[in-house]
Image (cartoon, rainbow, N blue to C red; front, side, top):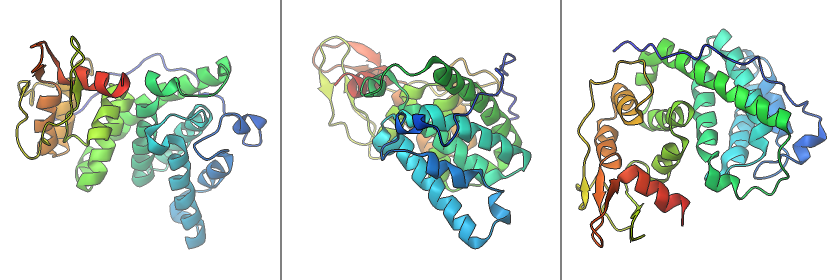
Length: 287
């Protein structure tokens, strides 16, 4: 299948970047505090032309930064300041045709976005964020979406050759960037293998279904397969495009699991029916 994603024709101007020496980094912190010092090494020259020491420092800073930005799958105010920098870095790596760092940046930023959901935002102890900061953050996400589409179209065959764990991490990030952040959060928590649901009618919670890799779960009627029904362009139906994208990356087990996440759960207590993904979101976000 040839991918040709729908394009956003109204992209914003490049977002502003808060200076790394600004006091705002002491207000908009990550899990472990100010992340500005973790960003600085990432803005150096292209990793492959650095010395071994610089490459190591770059790798450590990269890992530390994103651990700070989505530790324990929580959202942190530092994301508002850091994501515009990372999108700017992604655009530089695209110009340099640096496949690996683009892949890693998209994977990590998508995970950050999967934490940017209402239940997590309610826990932020921060005064109302500055409107300019939020505007730049949202603008950077629009640019990230377009850059992600371009990356996938250009490097699909190379992405297909990545390791299974790397691909799983990547396609869940892509779901958060291009589709449904809450669904990406759910699939990250369950690793596309377990179903936890709360009935939308009687509030009955089902937590003891066997993993999908063990057996087909009781009480769930899987959705019909949609493989082959995607045009490679539209992102309107998350189940359709995401299932086909996962299939393109070769994860047949995940494709099968998605038929259950987008299937119908029948409550054993009251008999009410609902889509598993919707009831899983209720389980995770309304506890």
